[in-house]
Amino acid sequence: MNKSKKSVGVVLALTVLSTILSGCVTTERQPASASVRHEGAPGSQQQLNFQLPSGVYGCELGQSVEIQRDAAASLIEINWQGSRHTLQRYDSSSGLPRYEDRQNGLLWIDLPWKGVLMDVNSGQPLANECKATSG
Image (tube, rainbow, N blue to C red; front, side):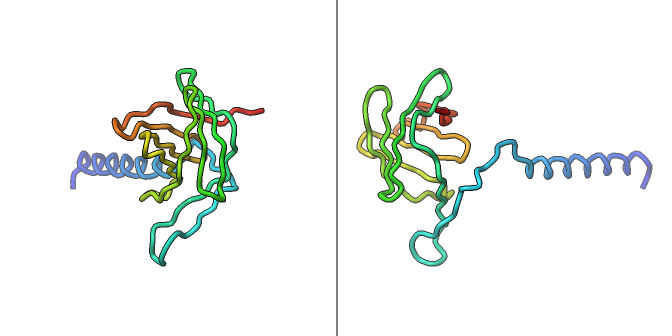
């Protein structure tokens, strides 16, 4: 093998390694209070539980969503643009907390570091990058 082929191989290997390692890095911290629970029969998809606060969540573009959580009942109540909606938790294929108001087409997805409110009918985010505001 000549020198130029070896250097191309080394560069390619370093590029692949760099890409793989960058996928392992996370810039967001997950809270220690995150836990996992099993729903349904053995072998079913694990559903995640995060101990996230109730209160006002500030979102992109100056929007806000107020959330009251009732983990025992698998419900959240949101105040969005002056209207209150009750959303029921449903299992998701990813295991992430997914709450829906199917009658009004609203979907709230919890991540440990943010939430997003979506319009189920259009698939578009209504409020994105929502984070709990401090006291």
